[in-house]
Length: 161
View 1 (cartoon, one colour):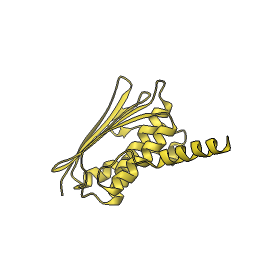
View 2: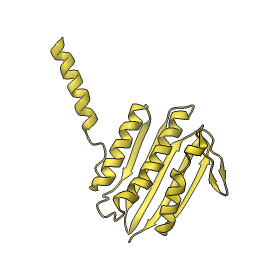
View 3: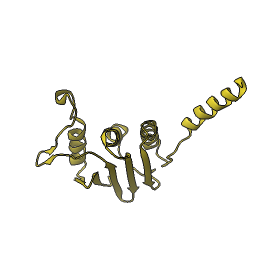
């Protein structure tokens, strides 16, 4: 019994270390695999459509600002959604980067000034998306976001450097 329990625990630990995403870009892989684990732990279905991202020339800090904020928001929205949480993450590189993150979400208030934070302590939150917007503006990217029928979607086209 003790040996079986040990093998089960070892298998569970090993499974959590398996990389789900391999984009050939170590920073993107680290972020996506960590966010996948966070989604999995919250029973959120997260799927990827990704090609070889080895040519992405964004810095590590730019990738962290962009991907971590958008995926953290998606995970948080899924945790609050009435139905099962789902995230669809698309990242494609070819003469630039196309990024789309689509997730189930409770209704989102979108105004001409952006998206209202849903955090209880709004003074301590709501900086993630403005940081993403500033970064994308600096990169001369085009981006859009929308909420419809229980799904929030953020899409960006980042020109190649």
